[in-house]
Length: 54
Image (cartoon, rainbow, N blue to C red; front, side, top):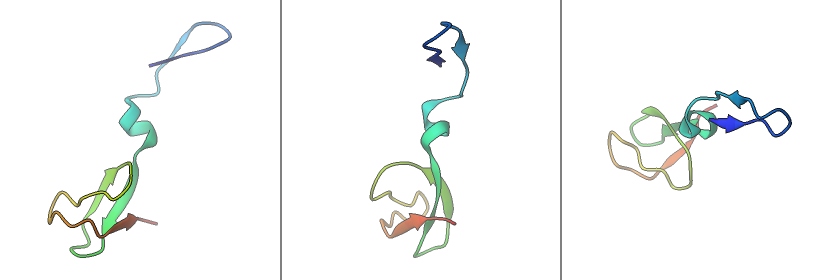
């Protein structure tokens, strides 16, 4: 939860993973998953050949 700088009220944006995560697609097995960071590993086949899904 993030706090508003002007009024101090709580703004519920969800978990930090939900805010910054994006859809990725494995180039080897075509599995689509959510994650964030660099050189993500596919949870299905463990390949690091992944790209942001469009």
